[in-house]
Amino acid sequence: MGGDGTGKKIQKSRMSQGAEAGGGQAGQVPEVVADVFAEQAGSIELLWGGRGRPSRGPKPALSLDRITRTAIELADAGGLTAVSMQRIAGELNFTKMSLYRYVPGKTELVALMIDTAMSEPPALRSGSGWRPALREWAGGLSAVFHRHPWLLPATAGSRVMGPNELGWVESALAALSDTGLDGAEKLDAVVVVNGHIRTIAQIAGSMGEGGTRAKSPERAMSAALNELLTGRSDRYPALTAAVTSAAAADDSHDQALEFGLERIFDGLESYMSRRAAQRSEADAG
Amino acid sequence: MGGDGTGKKIQKSRMSQGAEAGGGQAGQVPEVVADVFAEQAGSIELLWGGRGRPSRGPKPALSLDRITRTAIELADAGGLTAVSMQRIAGELNFTKMSLYRYVPGKTELVALMIDTAMSEPPALRSGSGWRPALREWAGGLSAVFHRHPWLLPATAGSRVMGPNELGWVESALAALSDTGLDGAEKLDAVVVVNGHIRTIAQIAGSMGEGGTRAKSPERAMSAALNELLTGRSDRYPALTAAVTSAAAADDSHDQALEFGLERIFDGLESYMSRRAAQRSEADAG
DNA sequence: GAAAACTGTATCCGGCGGACACTGTTTTGT
DNA sequence: ACAAAACAGTGTCCGCCGGATACAGTTTTC
Image (cartoon, rainbow over all chains, first blue to last red; front, side, top):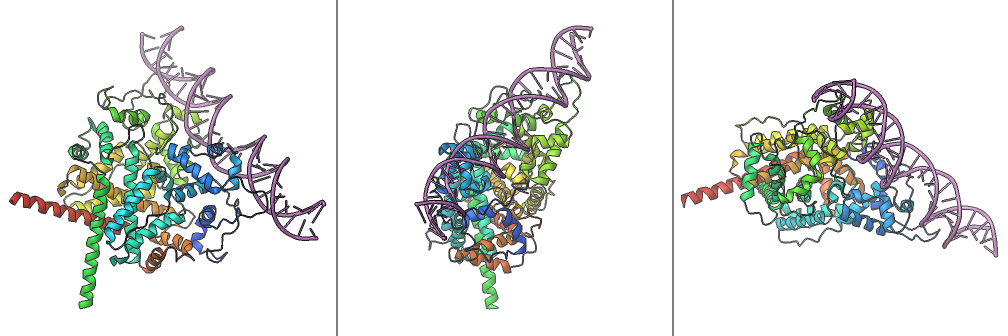
Protein backbone atom coordinates (compact mmCIF):
# COMPACT_ATOMS: atom_id res chain seq x y z
CA MET A 1 0.00 0.00 0.00
CA GLY A 2 2.77 2.40 0.63
CA GLY A 3 4.51 3.21 -2.56
CA ASP A 4 3.17 1.87 -5.79
CA GLY A 5 -0.43 0.89 -5.94
CA THR A 6 -1.01 0.05 -9.57
CA GLY A 7 0.58 -3.27 -10.35
CA LYS A 8 3.46 -3.23 -12.77
CA LYS A 9 4.94 -5.77 -15.02
CA ILE A 10 7.29 -7.99 -13.17
CA GLN A 11 8.95 -9.66 -16.08
CA LYS A 12 11.36 -7.10 -17.38
CA SER A 13 14.34 -8.40 -15.49
CA ARG A 14 16.70 -11.01 -16.57
CA MET A 15 18.95 -7.98 -16.96
CA SER A 16 22.40 -8.82 -15.87
CA GLN A 17 22.69 -12.41 -14.86
CA GLY A 18 24.98 -13.24 -12.04
CA ALA A 19 22.68 -12.93 -9.08
CA GLU A 20 21.29 -15.99 -7.32
CA ALA A 21 24.83 -16.81 -6.40
CA GLY A 22 24.40 -15.63 -2.84
CA GLY A 23 20.67 -15.71 -2.13
CA GLY A 24 19.04 -18.88 -0.78
CA GLN A 25 18.33 -21.88 -2.94
CA ALA A 26 16.80 -20.98 -6.25
CA GLY A 27 13.07 -21.50 -6.42
CA GLN A 28 12.81 -22.16 -2.71
CA VAL A 29 11.66 -18.80 -1.46
CA PRO A 30 9.91 -18.86 1.94
CA GLU A 31 6.19 -18.42 1.28
CA VAL A 32 5.35 -15.01 2.65
CA VAL A 33 8.32 -13.10 1.43
CA ALA A 34 7.88 -14.41 -2.09
CA ASP A 35 5.41 -11.72 -3.13
CA VAL A 36 7.47 -8.88 -1.88
CA PHE A 37 10.55 -10.27 -3.47
CA ALA A 38 8.83 -10.83 -6.76
CA GLU A 39 7.76 -7.23 -6.99
CA GLN A 40 11.15 -5.97 -6.00
CA ALA A 41 13.33 -8.51 -7.68
CA GLY A 42 14.86 -5.81 -9.84
CA SER A 43 15.93 -3.77 -6.88
CA ILE A 44 17.40 -6.78 -5.17
CA GLU A 45 19.39 -7.78 -8.19
CA LEU A 46 20.65 -4.27 -8.71
CA LEU A 47 21.49 -3.66 -5.08
CA TRP A 48 22.75 -7.06 -4.09
CA GLY A 49 23.41 -8.97 -7.27
CA GLY A 50 26.93 -9.27 -8.53
CA ARG A 51 26.94 -7.24 -11.70
CA GLY A 52 29.07 -9.31 -14.05
CA ARG A 53 29.55 -7.70 -17.42
CA PRO A 54 28.41 -10.17 -20.08
CA SER A 55 31.09 -9.33 -22.64
CA ARG A 56 29.67 -10.15 -26.00
CA GLY A 57 28.41 -7.01 -27.64
CA PRO A 58 29.99 -3.57 -27.71
CA LYS A 59 31.37 -2.14 -24.50
CA PRO A 60 28.87 -0.01 -22.62
CA ALA A 61 29.58 3.67 -22.93
CA LEU A 62 27.72 4.36 -19.73
CA SER A 63 27.88 2.81 -16.31
CA LEU A 64 25.44 2.24 -13.51
CA ASP A 65 27.66 4.27 -11.29
CA ARG A 66 27.69 7.26 -13.56
CA ILE A 67 23.94 7.14 -13.95
CA THR A 68 23.38 6.81 -10.24
CA ARG A 69 25.75 9.61 -9.39
CA THR A 70 24.27 12.12 -11.81
CA ALA A 71 20.81 11.15 -10.60
CA ILE A 72 21.92 11.88 -7.06
CA GLU A 73 23.35 15.21 -8.13
CA LEU A 74 20.06 16.13 -9.70
CA ALA A 75 18.19 15.08 -6.59
CA ASP A 76 20.55 17.00 -4.35
CA ALA A 77 20.01 20.11 -6.42
CA GLY A 78 16.30 19.94 -7.08
CA GLY A 79 14.71 17.24 -5.02
CA LEU A 80 13.37 13.92 -6.13
CA THR A 81 10.93 15.47 -8.56
CA ALA A 82 13.84 16.90 -10.49
CA VAL A 83 15.05 13.40 -11.25
CA SER A 84 13.61 12.06 -14.45
CA MET A 85 15.04 9.62 -16.91
CA GLN A 86 15.12 12.29 -19.55
CA ARG A 87 17.01 14.72 -17.37
CA ILE A 88 19.53 12.15 -16.30
CA ALA A 89 20.05 11.10 -19.88
CA GLY A 90 20.28 14.70 -20.98
CA GLU A 91 22.89 15.42 -18.37
CA LEU A 92 24.92 12.55 -19.76
CA ASN A 93 24.25 13.37 -23.40
CA PHE A 94 22.41 10.16 -24.01
CA THR A 95 18.90 9.16 -24.91
CA LYS A 96 16.45 8.40 -22.22
CA MET A 97 15.98 4.82 -23.31
CA SER A 98 19.66 4.04 -23.19
CA LEU A 99 19.43 4.21 -19.42
CA TYR A 100 17.11 1.26 -19.43
CA ARG A 101 20.04 -0.89 -20.54
CA TYR A 102 21.47 -0.39 -17.10
CA VAL A 103 18.44 -0.05 -14.91
CA PRO A 104 15.17 -1.99 -15.11
CA GLY A 105 13.08 0.99 -14.06
CA LYS A 106 13.01 4.18 -12.14
CA THR A 107 12.06 2.69 -8.81
CA GLU A 108 15.08 0.46 -8.99
CA LEU A 109 17.25 3.42 -9.83
CA VAL A 110 15.92 5.28 -6.85
CA ALA A 111 16.72 2.29 -4.68
CA LEU A 112 20.26 2.45 -5.97
CA MET A 113 20.42 6.17 -5.41
CA ILE A 114 19.35 5.66 -1.84
CA ASP A 115 21.94 3.07 -1.05
CA THR A 116 24.65 5.01 -2.82
CA ALA A 117 23.78 8.27 -1.10
CA MET A 118 23.75 6.51 2.25
CA SER A 119 27.36 5.58 1.63
CA GLU A 120 29.37 3.45 3.98
CA PRO A 121 28.57 3.83 7.64
CA PRO A 122 31.34 5.52 9.61
CA ALA A 123 33.68 3.34 11.60
CA LEU A 124 32.69 3.85 15.19
CA ARG A 125 35.41 4.07 17.77
CA SER A 126 34.74 1.29 20.18
CA GLY A 127 35.69 0.99 23.80
CA SER A 128 34.12 4.21 24.93
CA GLY A 129 30.72 2.72 25.62
CA TRP A 130 27.56 2.44 23.59
CA ARG A 131 26.32 5.93 24.28
CA PRO A 132 29.05 7.97 22.62
CA ALA A 133 29.23 5.38 19.87
CA LEU A 134 25.56 5.67 19.13
CA ARG A 135 25.78 9.43 19.40
CA GLU A 136 28.44 9.43 16.76
CA TRP A 137 26.35 7.11 14.65
CA ALA A 138 23.40 9.44 14.95
CA GLY A 139 25.51 12.38 13.96
CA GLY A 140 26.74 10.62 10.88
CA LEU A 141 23.27 9.64 9.83
CA SER A 142 22.05 13.17 10.41
CA ALA A 143 24.79 14.45 8.17
CA VAL A 144 23.73 12.07 5.44
CA PHE A 145 20.16 13.30 5.56
CA HIS A 146 21.41 16.83 5.55
CA ARG A 147 23.51 16.24 2.47
CA HIS A 148 20.69 14.46 0.67
CA PRO A 149 17.36 15.82 1.81
CA TRP A 150 15.50 13.79 -0.79
CA LEU A 151 16.45 10.64 1.10
CA LEU A 152 13.62 11.24 3.49
CA PRO A 153 10.75 11.16 1.02
CA ALA A 154 12.60 8.52 -0.96
CA THR A 155 12.87 6.14 1.94
CA ALA A 156 9.31 6.62 3.12
CA GLY A 157 7.28 3.63 2.11
CA SER A 158 7.98 0.06 1.24
CA ARG A 159 11.34 -0.86 -0.16
CA VAL A 160 14.32 -3.16 -0.09
CA MET A 161 17.32 -2.21 1.96
CA GLY A 162 20.68 -2.07 0.25
CA PRO A 163 24.10 -3.09 1.46
CA ASN A 164 25.04 0.31 2.78
CA GLU A 165 21.77 0.82 4.53
CA LEU A 166 22.12 -2.55 6.17
CA GLY A 167 25.64 -1.54 7.03
CA TRP A 168 24.32 1.35 9.03
CA VAL A 169 22.04 -0.96 10.94
CA GLU A 170 24.90 -3.35 11.48
CA SER A 171 27.14 -0.66 12.86
CA ALA A 172 24.50 0.58 15.26
CA LEU A 173 23.84 -2.94 16.44
CA ALA A 174 27.53 -3.49 16.95
CA ALA A 175 27.62 -0.43 19.19
CA LEU A 176 24.98 -2.07 21.34
CA SER A 177 26.69 -5.42 21.59
CA ASP A 178 27.79 -5.13 25.21
CA THR A 179 24.57 -3.76 26.59
CA GLY A 180 22.89 -6.94 27.67
CA LEU A 181 19.94 -6.32 25.38
CA ASP A 182 18.70 -9.29 23.45
CA GLY A 183 18.49 -9.30 19.68
CA ALA A 184 14.97 -7.98 19.33
CA GLU A 185 15.60 -5.24 21.83
CA LYS A 186 18.73 -4.13 20.06
CA LEU A 187 16.84 -3.99 16.80
CA ASP A 188 14.08 -2.03 18.45
CA ALA A 189 16.58 0.35 19.95
CA VAL A 190 18.16 1.01 16.60
CA VAL A 191 14.74 1.58 15.13
CA VAL A 192 13.97 4.21 17.74
CA VAL A 193 17.19 6.11 17.28
CA ASN A 194 17.01 5.89 13.52
CA GLY A 195 13.45 7.13 13.61
CA HIS A 196 14.39 10.10 15.69
CA ILE A 197 17.15 11.10 13.30
CA ARG A 198 14.72 10.91 10.44
CA THR A 199 12.15 12.95 12.28
CA ILE A 200 14.57 15.72 13.05
CA ALA A 201 15.95 15.68 9.55
CA GLN A 202 12.48 16.12 8.21
CA ILE A 203 11.65 19.04 10.44
CA ALA A 204 14.98 20.64 9.69
CA GLY A 205 14.58 20.16 5.97
CA SER A 206 11.04 21.42 6.06
CA MET A 207 11.93 25.03 6.21
CA GLY A 208 15.14 25.63 4.36
CA GLU A 209 13.47 25.80 0.99
CA GLY A 210 12.76 29.38 0.21
CA GLY A 211 16.22 30.85 0.00
CA THR A 212 16.68 31.45 3.70
CA ARG A 213 18.37 28.51 5.28
CA ALA A 214 16.99 27.03 8.42
CA LYS A 215 18.57 27.89 11.70
CA SER A 216 17.47 25.38 14.27
CA PRO A 217 14.56 23.00 13.78
CA GLU A 218 12.46 24.33 16.61
CA ARG A 219 13.10 27.91 15.54
CA ALA A 220 11.81 27.08 12.11
CA MET A 221 8.88 25.20 13.50
CA SER A 222 8.04 28.02 15.83
CA ALA A 223 8.18 30.59 13.09
CA ALA A 224 5.76 28.67 10.90
CA LEU A 225 3.51 27.82 13.80
CA ASN A 226 3.41 31.32 15.13
CA GLU A 227 1.89 32.54 11.94
CA LEU A 228 -0.85 29.95 12.06
CA LEU A 229 -1.49 30.34 15.74
CA THR A 230 -2.06 34.05 15.61
CA GLY A 231 -5.67 34.58 16.56
CA ARG A 232 -6.21 30.94 17.28
CA SER A 233 -4.57 30.65 20.65
CA ASP A 234 -7.89 29.74 22.21
CA ARG A 235 -8.11 26.65 20.10
CA TYR A 236 -4.55 25.58 20.74
CA PRO A 237 -3.68 26.86 24.19
CA ALA A 238 -0.99 24.36 25.06
CA LEU A 239 0.66 24.79 21.69
CA THR A 240 0.59 28.54 21.92
CA ALA A 241 2.10 28.45 25.37
CA ALA A 242 4.80 26.02 24.33
CA VAL A 243 5.72 27.94 21.23
CA THR A 244 5.92 31.31 22.91
CA SER A 245 7.93 29.80 25.73
CA ALA A 246 10.22 28.08 23.25
CA ALA A 247 10.78 31.29 21.36
CA ALA A 248 12.53 32.73 24.39
CA ALA A 249 14.87 29.80 24.91
CA ASP A 250 18.39 29.72 23.58
CA ASP A 251 18.79 27.18 20.85
CA SER A 252 22.21 27.68 19.41
CA HIS A 253 22.51 24.12 18.23
CA ASP A 254 20.08 21.41 17.28
CA GLN A 255 18.25 21.12 20.50
CA ALA A 256 15.48 18.92 19.23
CA LEU A 257 17.96 16.36 17.98
CA GLU A 258 19.99 16.27 21.14
CA PHE A 259 17.12 16.40 23.57
CA GLY A 260 15.31 13.51 21.99
CA LEU A 261 18.44 11.53 21.50
CA GLU A 262 19.56 11.89 25.08
CA ARG A 263 16.10 11.06 26.34
CA ILE A 264 16.10 7.89 24.28
CA PHE A 265 19.55 7.05 25.55
CA ASP A 266 18.43 7.69 29.11
CA GLY A 267 15.51 5.38 28.60
CA LEU A 268 17.67 2.68 27.14
CA GLU A 269 20.18 3.04 29.92
CA SER A 270 17.63 2.76 32.66
CA TYR A 271 16.20 -0.28 30.97
CA MET A 272 19.60 -1.88 30.72
CA SER A 273 20.41 -1.36 34.36
CA ARG A 274 16.98 -2.61 35.33
CA ARG A 275 17.58 -5.74 33.33
CA ALA A 276 21.03 -6.16 34.77
CA ALA A 277 19.58 -5.89 38.26
CA GLN A 278 16.97 -8.49 37.45
CA ARG A 279 19.61 -10.81 36.15
CA SER A 280 21.97 -10.53 39.05
CA GLU A 281 19.05 -10.99 41.40
CA ALA A 282 18.09 -14.14 39.56
CA ASP A 283 21.67 -15.32 39.76
CA ALA A 284 21.85 -14.66 43.48
CA GLY A 285 18.46 -16.24 44.20
CA MET B 1 14.68 20.97 -1.44
CA GLY B 2 12.36 18.43 -0.01
CA GLY B 3 9.24 18.14 -2.01
CA ASP B 4 8.95 20.13 -5.16
CA GLY B 5 12.07 21.30 -6.81
CA THR B 6 10.89 22.95 -9.95
CA GLY B 7 9.28 26.24 -9.12
CA LYS B 8 5.61 26.54 -9.85
CA LYS B 9 3.36 29.39 -10.56
CA ILE B 10 2.23 31.03 -7.41
CA GLN B 11 -0.53 33.15 -8.77
CA LYS B 12 -3.40 30.79 -9.36
CA SER B 13 -5.14 31.42 -6.12
CA ARG B 14 -7.59 34.04 -5.32
CA MET B 15 -9.90 31.05 -5.26
CA SER B 16 -12.47 31.49 -2.59
CA GLN B 17 -12.09 34.73 -0.80
CA GLY B 18 -12.78 34.81 2.87
CA ALA B 19 -9.37 34.01 4.28
CA GLU B 20 -7.24 36.72 5.86
CA ALA B 21 -9.92 37.04 8.46
CA GLY B 22 -7.89 35.17 11.05
CA GLY B 23 -4.29 35.43 9.97
CA GLY B 24 -2.05 38.28 11.06
CA GLN B 25 -2.27 41.73 9.51
CA ALA B 26 -2.50 41.57 5.75
CA GLY B 27 0.75 42.37 3.99
CA GLN B 28 2.77 42.25 7.17
CA VAL B 29 4.26 38.81 6.96
CA PRO B 30 7.43 38.30 9.04
CA GLU B 31 10.36 38.25 6.60
CA VAL B 32 11.61 34.68 6.68
CA VAL B 33 8.33 32.88 6.61
CA ALA B 34 7.12 34.89 3.67
CA ASP B 35 8.69 32.68 1.04
CA VAL B 36 7.33 29.51 2.48
CA PHE B 37 3.94 31.02 2.86
CA ALA B 38 3.91 32.35 -0.64
CA GLU B 39 4.56 28.93 -2.10
CA GLN B 40 1.98 27.31 0.07
CA ALA B 41 -0.62 29.99 0.18
CA GLY B 42 -3.08 27.73 -1.52
CA SER B 43 -2.74 25.05 1.09
CA ILE B 44 -3.10 27.54 3.86
CA GLU B 45 -6.21 29.02 2.42
CA LEU B 46 -7.75 25.64 1.86
CA LEU B 47 -6.80 24.25 5.22
CA TRP B 48 -7.28 27.29 7.38
CA GLY B 49 -9.27 29.76 5.37
CA GLY B 50 -12.96 30.12 5.95
CA ARG B 51 -14.53 28.83 2.80
CA GLY B 52 -17.36 31.23 2.18
CA ARG B 53 -19.50 30.34 -0.81
CA PRO B 54 -19.66 33.32 -3.18
CA SER B 55 -23.28 32.84 -4.24
CA ARG B 56 -23.65 34.35 -7.66
CA GLY B 57 -23.43 31.60 -10.25
CA PRO B 58 -25.02 28.17 -10.25
CA LYS B 59 -24.80 26.10 -7.13
CA PRO B 60 -21.80 23.82 -7.12
CA ALA B 61 -22.70 20.23 -7.80
CA LEU B 62 -19.57 19.04 -6.08
CA SER B 63 -18.05 19.84 -2.75
CA LEU B 64 -14.55 19.97 -1.38
CA ASP B 65 -15.55 17.39 1.14
CA ARG B 66 -16.78 14.93 -1.41
CA ILE B 67 -13.66 15.34 -3.48
CA THR B 68 -11.39 14.95 -0.51
CA ARG B 69 -13.22 11.90 0.75
CA THR B 70 -13.14 10.04 -2.53
CA ALA B 71 -9.50 10.95 -2.92
CA ILE B 72 -8.84 9.44 0.49
CA GLU B 73 -10.75 6.31 -0.45
CA LEU B 74 -8.63 5.94 -3.53
CA ALA B 75 -5.47 6.43 -1.53
CA ASP B 76 -6.57 3.95 1.11
CA ALA B 77 -7.20 1.38 -1.57
CA GLY B 78 -4.25 1.89 -3.84
CA GLY B 79 -1.75 4.21 -2.26
CA LEU B 80 -0.95 7.78 -3.13
CA THR B 81 -0.01 6.92 -6.69
CA ALA B 82 -3.54 5.72 -7.28
CA VAL B 83 -4.80 9.22 -6.63
CA SER B 84 -4.99 11.29 -9.76
CA MET B 85 -7.31 14.07 -10.72
CA GLN B 86 -8.72 11.98 -13.50
CA ARG B 87 -9.49 9.06 -11.26
CA ILE B 88 -11.08 11.20 -8.61
CA ALA B 89 -13.19 12.92 -11.22
CA GLY B 90 -14.07 9.60 -12.82
CA GLU B 91 -15.18 8.22 -9.49
CA LEU B 92 -17.49 11.19 -9.13
CA ASN B 93 -18.65 11.17 -12.75
CA PHE B 94 -17.17 14.56 -13.45
CA THR B 95 -14.49 15.91 -15.68
CA LYS B 96 -11.00 16.24 -14.35
CA MET B 97 -10.94 19.98 -14.75
CA SER B 98 -14.09 20.52 -12.78
CA LEU B 99 -12.14 19.60 -9.67
CA TYR B 100 -9.96 22.62 -10.16
CA ARG B 101 -12.94 24.78 -9.31
CA TYR B 102 -12.64 23.51 -5.76
CA VAL B 103 -8.93 22.90 -5.40
CA PRO B 104 -6.06 25.02 -6.71
CA GLY B 105 -3.85 22.03 -7.39
CA LYS B 106 -3.03 18.52 -6.45
CA THR B 107 -0.56 19.37 -3.72
CA GLU B 108 -3.21 21.41 -2.00
CA LEU B 109 -5.65 18.56 -2.32
CA VAL B 110 -3.16 16.20 -0.76
CA ALA B 111 -2.70 18.63 2.09
CA LEU B 112 -6.44 18.54 2.61
CA MET B 113 -6.48 14.77 2.40
CA ILE B 114 -3.83 14.61 5.06
CA ASP B 115 -5.62 16.81 7.50
CA THR B 116 -8.93 15.13 6.85
CA ALA B 117 -7.50 11.65 7.24
CA MET B 118 -5.84 12.68 10.46
CA SER B 119 -9.26 13.52 11.83
CA GLU B 120 -9.82 15.01 15.23
CA PRO B 121 -7.40 13.93 17.91
CA PRO B 122 -8.98 11.71 20.55
CA ALA B 123 -10.00 13.29 23.82
CA LEU B 124 -7.45 12.09 26.33
CA ARG B 125 -8.63 11.20 29.76
CA SER B 126 -6.77 13.44 32.09
CA GLY B 127 -5.85 12.94 35.69
CA SER B 128 -4.10 9.63 35.28
CA GLY B 129 -0.71 11.12 34.53
CA TRP B 130 1.10 12.00 31.39
CA ARG B 131 2.36 8.51 30.67
CA PRO B 132 -0.93 6.74 30.10
CA ALA B 133 -2.27 9.82 28.37
CA LEU B 134 0.61 9.88 25.93
CA ARG B 135 0.35 6.14 25.49
CA GLU B 136 -3.23 6.54 24.49
CA TRP B 137 -2.28 9.36 22.18
CA ALA B 138 0.34 7.19 20.56
CA GLY B 139 -2.13 4.39 20.10
CA GLY B 140 -4.58 6.70 18.41
CA LEU B 141 -1.98 8.07 16.07
CA SER B 142 -0.80 4.58 15.26
CA ALA B 143 -4.33 3.63 14.36
CA VAL B 144 -4.57 6.58 12.02
CA PHE B 145 -1.44 5.56 10.18
CA HIS B 146 -2.71 2.04 10.03
CA ARG B 147 -5.97 3.15 8.50
CA HIS B 148 -4.25 5.43 6.01
CA PRO B 149 -0.83 4.05 5.15
CA TRP B 150 -0.34 6.67 2.46
CA LEU B 151 -0.13 9.29 5.19
CA LEU B 152 3.48 8.38 5.76
CA PRO B 153 4.83 9.15 2.32
CA ALA B 154 2.39 12.02 2.05
CA THR B 155 3.64 13.74 5.17
CA ALA B 156 7.30 13.23 4.40
CA GLY B 157 8.75 16.46 3.17
CA SER B 158 7.88 20.09 3.51
CA ARG B 159 4.32 21.07 4.09
CA VAL B 160 1.84 23.14 6.03
CA MET B 161 0.12 21.62 9.01
CA GLY B 162 -3.64 21.66 9.10
CA PRO B 163 -6.04 22.20 11.97
CA ASN B 164 -6.40 18.54 12.82
CA GLU B 165 -2.72 17.87 12.65
CA LEU B 166 -2.10 20.81 14.93
CA GLY B 167 -4.83 19.44 17.12
CA TRP B 168 -2.87 16.27 17.61
CA VAL B 169 0.15 18.26 18.65
CA GLU B 170 -1.99 20.32 20.97
CA SER B 171 -3.43 17.29 22.64
CA ALA B 172 -0.03 15.72 23.19
CA LEU B 173 1.28 18.96 24.64
CA ALA B 174 -1.69 19.16 26.93
CA ALA B 175 -0.87 15.73 28.24
CA LEU B 176 2.56 17.02 29.17
CA SER B 177 1.34 20.14 30.89
CA ASP B 178 2.07 19.06 34.46
CA THR B 179 5.47 17.60 33.84
CA GLY B 180 7.65 20.56 34.63
CA LEU B 181 9.12 20.60 31.16
CA ASP B 182 9.46 23.98 29.52
CA GLY B 183 7.86 24.78 26.21
CA ALA B 184 10.72 23.76 23.98
CA GLU B 185 11.20 20.52 25.84
CA LYS B 186 7.56 19.64 25.57
CA LEU B 187 7.67 20.28 21.86
CA ASP B 188 10.76 18.18 21.54
CA ALA B 189 9.17 15.39 23.53
CA VAL B 190 6.16 15.37 21.26
CA VAL B 191 8.45 15.30 18.27
CA VAL B 192 10.22 12.23 19.58
CA VAL B 193 7.07 10.30 20.31
CA ASN B 194 5.48 11.31 17.06
CA GLY B 195 8.58 10.27 15.19
CA HIS B 196 8.58 6.90 16.81
CA ILE B 197 4.98 6.25 15.86
CA ARG B 198 5.78 7.17 12.31
CA THR B 199 8.81 4.92 12.23
CA ILE B 200 6.89 1.92 13.46
CA ALA B 201 4.03 2.62 11.12
CA GLN B 202 6.43 2.67 8.24
CA ILE B 203 8.05 -0.62 9.16
CA ALA B 204 4.68 -2.21 9.75
CA GLY B 205 3.32 -0.93 6.48
CA SER B 206 6.40 -2.01 4.62
CA MET B 207 5.47 -5.60 4.42
CA GLY B 208 1.73 -5.93 4.26
CA GLU B 209 1.56 -5.30 0.54
CA GLY B 210 1.52 -8.61 -1.21
CA GLY B 211 -1.68 -10.16 -0.05
CA THR B 212 -0.37 -11.61 3.18
CA ARG B 213 -0.88 -9.14 5.97
CA ALA B 214 1.92 -8.31 8.30
CA LYS B 215 2.06 -9.90 11.69
CA SER B 216 4.38 -7.91 13.89
CA PRO B 217 6.80 -5.34 12.58
CA GLU B 218 9.93 -7.12 13.72
CA ARG B 219 8.67 -10.43 12.38
CA ALA B 220 8.22 -8.86 8.99
CA MET B 221 11.54 -7.13 9.20
CA SER B 222 13.23 -10.33 10.19
CA ALA B 223 11.69 -12.29 7.37
CA ALA B 224 12.87 -9.83 4.78
CA LEU B 225 16.26 -9.46 6.36
CA ASN B 226 16.81 -13.16 6.72
CA GLU B 227 16.56 -13.61 3.03
CA LEU B 228 19.16 -10.98 2.36
CA LEU B 229 21.45 -12.08 5.14
CA THR B 230 21.70 -15.65 3.97
CA GLY B 231 25.28 -16.19 3.00
CA ARG B 232 26.30 -12.75 4.12
CA SER B 233 26.48 -13.27 7.84
CA ASP B 234 30.17 -12.52 7.78
CA ARG B 235 29.54 -9.04 6.51
CA TYR B 236 26.76 -8.30 8.97
CA PRO B 237 27.56 -10.34 12.06
CA ALA B 238 25.74 -8.21 14.61
CA LEU B 239 22.69 -8.01 12.43
CA THR B 240 22.63 -11.72 11.80
CA ALA B 241 22.94 -12.44 15.48
CA ALA B 242 20.22 -9.98 16.38
CA VAL B 243 17.83 -11.25 13.76
CA THR B 244 18.26 -14.91 14.60
CA SER B 245 17.92 -14.12 18.27
CA ALA B 246 14.83 -12.04 17.60
CA ALA B 247 13.26 -14.80 15.57
CA ALA B 248 13.07 -16.93 18.69
CA ALA B 249 11.42 -14.29 20.84
CA ASP B 250 7.72 -14.11 21.39
CA ASP B 251 6.20 -11.09 19.78
CA SER B 252 2.49 -11.47 20.06
CA HIS B 253 1.88 -7.76 19.91
CA ASP B 254 3.71 -4.79 18.51
CA GLN B 255 6.85 -5.07 20.48
CA ALA B 256 8.81 -2.52 18.51
CA LEU B 257 6.19 0.11 19.15
CA GLU B 258 5.89 -0.57 22.84
CA PHE B 259 9.54 -1.05 23.53
CA GLY B 260 10.57 2.18 21.91
CA LEU B 261 7.68 4.07 23.40
CA GLU B 262 8.36 2.91 26.92
CA ARG B 263 12.05 3.63 26.52
CA ILE B 264 11.24 7.15 25.41
CA PHE B 265 8.86 7.53 28.32
CA ASP B 266 11.48 6.23 30.71
CA GLY B 267 13.95 8.73 29.37
CA LEU B 268 11.50 11.57 29.71
CA GLU B 269 10.56 10.51 33.20
CA SER B 270 14.12 10.35 34.41
CA TYR B 271 14.75 13.75 32.91
CA MET B 272 11.72 15.19 34.64
CA SER B 273 12.69 13.86 38.03
CA ARG B 274 16.23 15.07 37.51
CA ARG B 275 14.93 18.53 36.74
CA ALA B 276 12.57 18.46 39.67
CA ALA B 277 15.46 17.55 41.93
CA GLN B 278 17.52 20.41 40.56
CA ARG B 279 14.72 22.83 41.14
CA SER B 280 13.95 21.81 44.69
CA GLU B 281 17.65 21.95 45.42
CA ALA B 282 17.78 25.45 44.05
CA ASP B 283 14.78 26.37 46.13
CA ALA B 284 16.32 25.01 49.26
CA GLY B 285 19.70 26.64 48.60
C1' DG C 1 -33.75 41.86 -19.06
C1' DA C 2 -28.87 42.76 -19.56
C1' DA C 3 -24.54 42.21 -17.28
C1' DA C 4 -21.74 39.98 -14.10
C1' DA C 5 -20.33 36.02 -11.65
C1' DC C 6 -19.99 31.52 -11.45
C1' DT C 7 -19.98 26.16 -12.82
C1' DG C 8 -18.69 22.41 -15.52
C1' DT C 9 -16.69 20.95 -20.20
C1' DA C 10 -13.56 20.31 -24.17
C1' DT C 11 -9.30 20.85 -25.99
C1' DC C 12 -4.54 21.30 -25.73
C1' DC C 13 0.17 21.27 -23.85
C1' DG C 14 4.66 19.56 -21.98
C1' DG C 15 6.51 16.01 -19.37
C1' DC C 16 6.56 11.59 -17.34
C1' DG C 17 7.78 6.23 -17.28
C1' DG C 18 8.12 2.73 -20.30
C1' DA C 19 7.28 -0.87 -24.51
C1' DC C 20 8.99 -1.96 -28.89
C1' DA C 21 11.27 -2.19 -33.18
C1' DC C 22 15.35 -0.90 -35.16
C1' DT C 23 20.48 -0.16 -36.58
C1' DG C 24 25.09 -0.73 -35.43
C1' DT C 25 28.90 -3.08 -32.92
C1' DT C 26 31.48 -6.71 -30.89
C1' DT C 27 32.31 -11.42 -29.64
C1' DT C 28 31.91 -16.46 -30.34
C1' DG C 29 31.67 -20.80 -32.78
C1' DT C 30 32.51 -23.05 -36.87
C1' DA D 1 37.07 -15.90 -42.73
C1' DC D 2 32.34 -15.53 -41.79
C1' DA D 3 27.84 -16.07 -40.12
C1' DA D 4 25.20 -16.09 -35.91
C1' DA D 5 24.42 -14.51 -31.50
C1' DA D 6 24.58 -11.14 -28.00
C1' DC D 7 24.80 -6.92 -26.91
C1' DA D 8 24.51 -1.14 -27.08
C1' DG D 9 22.22 2.96 -28.14
C1' DT D 10 18.33 5.39 -30.93
C1' DG D 11 13.72 6.75 -32.51
C1' DT D 12 9.03 6.26 -32.24
C1' DC D 13 4.95 5.42 -29.93
C1' DC D 14 1.65 4.87 -26.03
C1' DG D 15 -1.07 6.01 -21.91
C1' DC D 16 -1.14 8.78 -18.10
C1' DC D 17 -0.16 12.76 -15.43
C1' DG D 18 -0.98 17.88 -13.71
C1' DG D 19 -2.48 21.94 -15.46
C1' DA D 20 -3.65 26.40 -18.72
C1' DT D 21 -7.10 28.22 -21.47
C1' DA D 22 -11.16 29.12 -23.96
C1' DC D 23 -15.80 28.22 -23.93
C1' DA D 24 -21.02 27.26 -23.22
C1' DG D 25 -24.58 27.09 -19.85
C1' DT D 26 -26.67 28.77 -15.41
C1' DT D 27 -27.82 31.77 -11.70
C1' DT D 28 -27.77 36.06 -9.29
C1' DT D 29 -27.66 41.15 -9.06
C1' DC D 30 -28.65 45.63 -10.75
